[in-house]
Length: 190
Image 1 (spheres, rainbow, N blue to C red):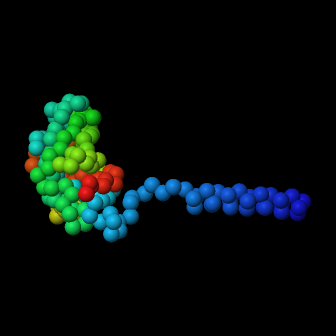
Image 2: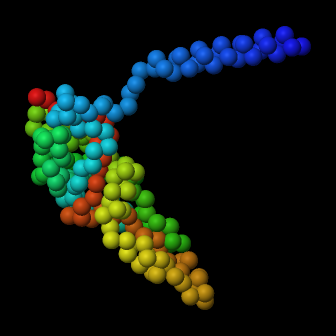
Image 3: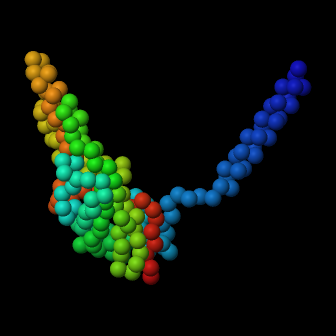
């Protein structure tokens, strides 16, 4: 019985060792490290890009496939070099648009951003990401959630009226800045 346990233990150790060796030799595909060679030519994944929409997109009146345009608000730097100049324009389209409904059902909006095309032909993939949403939340002064809580308080006798109330439409308003994030490391041409 002890010999069987010893053989099982040795086999398990061998499998673990082989599994660890496979992980150690795996090809890394994380963000490119920033060093002297890449500092002025790399727009790293996760880099924030502040934009404004040039027209309002709202679940109250949009359709799937609707196109929109946006403008970059601030220069995006790659080291000491301007990688994406302020004023650069881009485009995208609506991929999901569901208007708000009664019963407090909020609208649903999903937009896809086309890659930002730079003057040298470089394409920079961008999207709304969790990090870009956090950056926008951190820029707020902190009173918005408190005001929303006050607006959502209800008097007990008015529950039925509140239940029948239409939900909120989702709107990306024109000229209201928000952030996108670069979704893939991009190298600028020299």
